[in-house]
Image 1 (cartoon, rainbow, N blue to C red):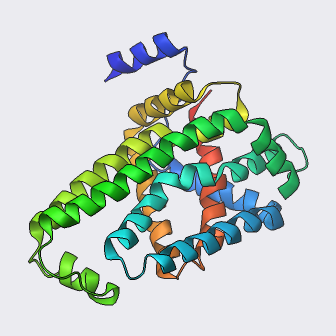
Image 2: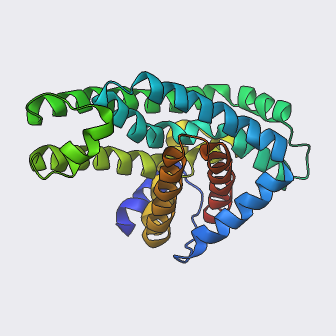
Length: 257
């Protein structure tokens, strides 16, 4: 592992990565909460917008279970790019600059090219996952698809579709792990430095590889908080998305010298 990470550093001229303890993600959350509290209006503007957008997407997919499950899991794939404006708020806040909504949007425009390339990559992954989800349903799920209100009980909890559940979890988990490794800190890095998307993604992969314990805790916290957001019909996401976005900025600052 160390040899491959050193090879990445040599070919992409990657910055040095710090190693942190497993409890460090809780510090990132505390710092993220502080950023959100100090920039409440701008932060909640992003949270409310994406929570409303997420609710509309889930409502559209509510009578299509394979789309509904793909939409929920797809949120984890596109979340890093959706929070780009929040990273800019934290960056400006750290620098003692005005961190308004307008200022964050101008920051997005300034880094538009790099964000576009990374966003295109995430969009391709999301579309691929939607198609893979449909294929898995066609291959492993036999019979009529139940209504969404009974879907989890009849499909995931009944024990009658073990092959489908295992295949769905393995394929979805592999995609999620890949995207997490490449995007854990790459978007904040693009907002902060004059680097290309590939170097940012490789830096993120290296940071994850050198801090597996801390990043596993961080991934678990993200899943748990996003699950709370979905459980509250996206209402909680209006606060949880800004919290996670600001915390991700501090993860980047902590891990990358």
